[in-house]
Amino acid sequence: MLRALRLLFDNFTLILLGVVAVATLLPAQGQGAVFFDVLTTAAIALLFFMHGAKLSRQAIVAGAMHWRLHLLVFGCTFVMFPLIGVLLKPMLLPLLGEPLYIGMLFLCVLPGTVQSAIAFTSLAGGNVPAAVCSASASSIIGIVLTPLLVAALLNMQAGEVVSPLDSILSISAQLLLPFMAGHLLRPVIGGFVDRNRGWLGRIDQGSILLVVYTALSASVVDGLWQSVSVSKLMVLTAVCCMLLALVLWLTAWLGRSLGFSREDCITIVFAGSKKSMATGVPMAKVLFSGAMLGPALLPLMLFHQIQLMVCAVLAQKYAREGAAVLNPGRTPVP
Image 1 (cartoon, rainbow, N blue to C red):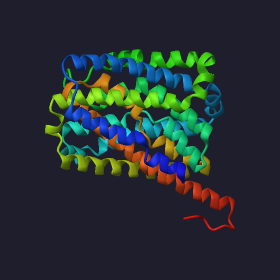
Image 2: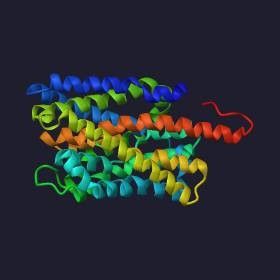
Image 3: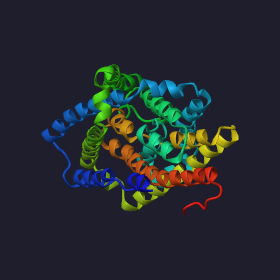
Image 4: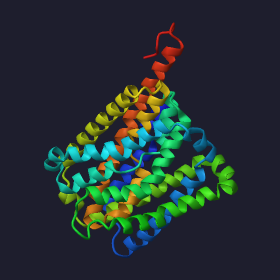
């Protein structure tokens, strides 16, 4: 229970809200914006370097053979999610307006999370090695696949979204190269990284917060909060809740219908229903510019927090059910 509460009410969420407030009241402008832009680029490179250094090849090999599960997770992440975003356009576009709807589509094409998918799978009693493999592969594949999906789904005017080739090259330079460098250096620095995951995790979070501040500052200067009202934010929150509920139900139903074990079904639910803020924020900075950047990020920031809160409760439910199966004579703790 304490572990779930730490995932549900974490300091990062509170600090993220503070960063949004600071970017709203004191956005970076002029030379300050140039300074933060350079600093953000360096922070993104460090973030993905550390992700690469943390990735254990042994864990990947342990889960890589479960190809049916991985195909289903990839299908949920890169096919089911985008299809839902497209099919809901007649409802979402009038409710949210074009900028926020584009943000919802961007959310739908992002890769899944790594850390939280693994943490919730472990807490719920799922197949952890398979979760490590699926989540890690999703993050890597998304570096190439997400820009292609953005170009295919977001039929935007020239200049608002860069070309797919430019996106892939830029994202590869900023994300993939540092990631590969970190992973190749894991034999040298892996022990240090594993021993210091606590404070290195804070560096990861700091990098994300820095990117959020820089991105939101640019959008605030371009009039973000003049175009996104409080009522529209409430509608966006409700839409994110609805999207998560639908995806959680679909992933659970697909796992059961295709005959996966209980442990694999848990992995499918938690690895196939999530979207990565750690990858999405840097990608948004590359793919969008100016006034489009803020609306592209808002759905992701809301969905990210909602998925953590809901999945923390869901993981506890799975854990209680597993305990009841192992100990049928005991009354489950409510």
